[in-house]
Picture 1: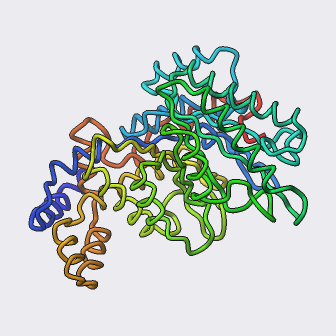
Picture 2: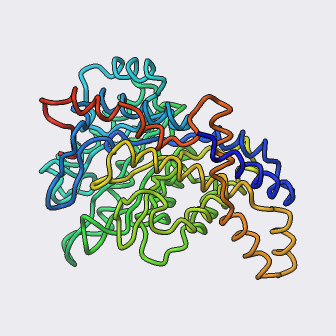
Picture 3: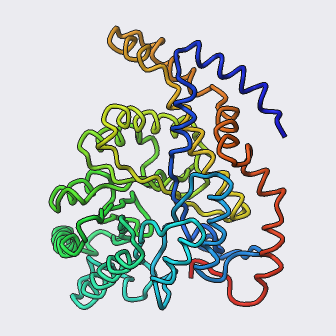
Length: 406
């Protein structure tokens, strides 16, 4: 179906009038890489229940098979993050071979320090040295798994915190965190980056040990250049200016990557761009500015971290990957010289209108052309719906225990 072709001609003409190199935009759009999370393909839910969907994977190998569909249709989702122990297997080299046979690679390795009963009162900040040692050993185990699967990114998140005043000694806990991360950092291979995630609150409610980008940045600065900050879009207080945080971390060369999702109230883990697409565009504007300014130094991992509770798993993943790509392209078509001139001359309305003009540009025809030029479907979501893959996995994956959060 070629309904987009007429629209492509119109939008191309308009962008060229603005001085945008459309062929360059199309190449850049298809060079993007968005990592999908293994856990996003399995059953998920809320604090109250995990809800089952037909056809969900029963193991990590089937998760990669579903992820391969997303990459086959979008062309920009070549890697899959894994979560340990959710995705633990007897032979991780076998998992690596399986991924490569599907045209994928294993991406970031995520440790789990929040579900073991021993971590009720913390993991690396627990008052019991035995529990802290257990947590450290798990982190080291995940680094070793990363070596086996060829991962270049280790992304720890710590649920540690307290629920009530006086429950923990803040300074003791900070010392334990620094000691832990120092040991873990020294175990990293030379080609692996550790991106430390932060979270404003939850599951602890009085304080979180690594609650914000500043704490994560402080810890990274103590460790070394391969320790960077991981920004999750759901992990900020309401009203936080995330684009500015992104710019600051880029300035300091400490931005390791993103967990893209969307939030309305707290860490809702909704699909990316579903609540505030303009914020996502402004984030990508900062990223593109930095990428164009210094392409050789630009190494930021784009990853999804979402909970597709009521959406079909693979459809939601395709939708999210495409949304990230669309916002990236909208940032690419910003008229940068006009914007910089307006900024230098303090023409506030003109500066804002320059961004708004890019944001409101319909880039779908540009992406449709870029995809079809590479043998991909113009509309990945529609192509998936017209395929028989969902019906196939619903038939074949009967029996066994569906993979999920637990």
